[in-house]
Length: 169
Image 1 (cartoon, rainbow, N blue to C red):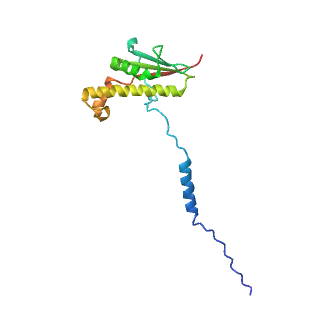
Image 2 (image 1 turned 30 degrees about the vertical axis):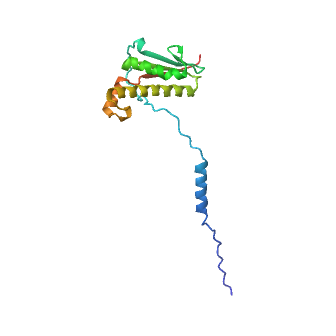
Image 3 (image 1 turned 90 degrees about the horizontal axis):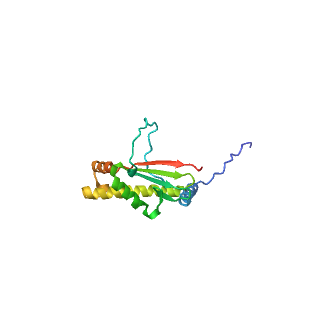
């Protein structure tokens, strides 16, 4: 007579929650944009620099590249169009060999787009030089050479670039 009735708790139907969560996951993966990082592959200098050594450089072996505040590129104080930049860099490095030095100077008000354009043109110039040298010396593409052969070409045409940024006065 005085027995209590057992009350049961209503259960939630969870069979579709896994399906819904996977659908939401796929939706967010598809609709989210994942931009590829833009960047340059450069080897940074060591954290602790040993004592700097001064060296005398012949001015004929020095190419001064300046990016002005209005995004113009100057090679040895002469305005150079963008489409002839790679050819000028390639010619300079090939004629000077491993004695060349390229100094990059960028004004702080110049855009990063022109800086990256210059870096890409510089990389393309070195790749073209190393490719033509590999074909002349070994009859193969630079990518097909052995590590020793690549090192030989890299010592003939090392990437010697010094950079600095200038501030507005």
